[in-house]
Image (cartoon, rainbow, N blue to C red; front, side, top):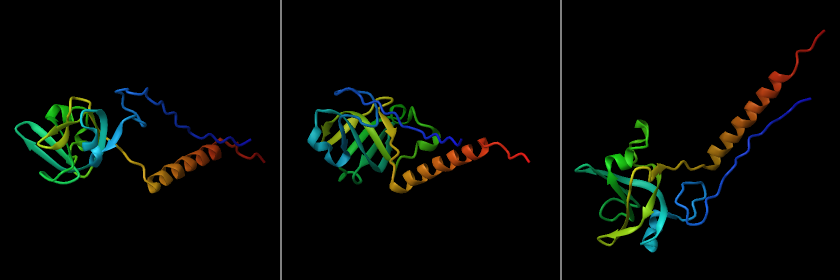
Length: 153
């Protein structure tokens, strides 16, 4: 008998108004739409278009370069990079999500980040999903092939 086991993905959805990270964060908005949510505690996601270091602070602009950017994350070095590995610390061009209360600074929306409020968000594309599924099926095939007994004769 050949047995094929497939992996399943178990997703736990957070309660409404929860501040926990998750795949289905209840208030996830694009950096381009953040100005419509000023005052709300949300998760904002977007591609970092500019990373600026100034006097121990880090500014991550989304949707353009300063001063014409759409949104900004900011905080001290530890709050931005504290939970990231060394290879994740160059964030320009990377897709990130940060959580906090959106405030206005000189008319632009921003979130001041505390430690743990920023993370890289790995987006799945059709190609990456097909590679993942293909690799899973290949490993399942190898496993079932190696479990078959050798013919005796």
